Image (tube, rainbow over all chains, first blue to last red; front, side):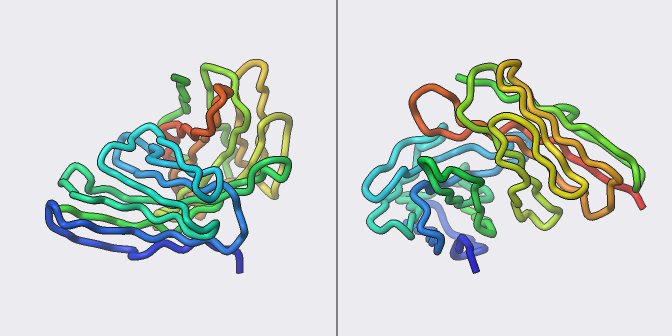
Length: 114
Length: 110
């Protein structure tokens, strides 16, 4: 089954404790992206990746890191989480180039930083 | 940067009614997508529609790129259509960002 898998689904952590949210897709998509969703603000893009070892900033990259060492995985790293990073996070993937079609989203990760 | 505006922000329908959701964007785009976020938070792609018209069952969408808007039509609405509808665009600025509108929150009453 074609899917984007995020883990964990729910996470409560303390300020400053490094964490990683994993994202994996099984569709061989080139493009992967991370978003955060906050009430009243919709979805905002954090980082995206066009392919292995190619990443770039979205609209709200501060406080986040990403890496794309393999095509299927695109982890989101919070080196020193703060309460303002409490949010609902989504990972997405899509093909790119001539085969461009719709994006597929993971189930979401609800993060609370206390 | 590009502005993406969706209207109306909120919509309440009686089951069986039809509706039109609108997405306006302020600059040229390479592509446009419509998504539905159900009450459980899951995001489902509805249409990838940089231009033209597409239909899928009771839903259809039209994008007029030259006039910078897209419309999502929902016919014979059902309670399962409730949730938030987002449009998302990739600006034609040489990068590959994706910008979402704020969404239209739809509630369909039985």
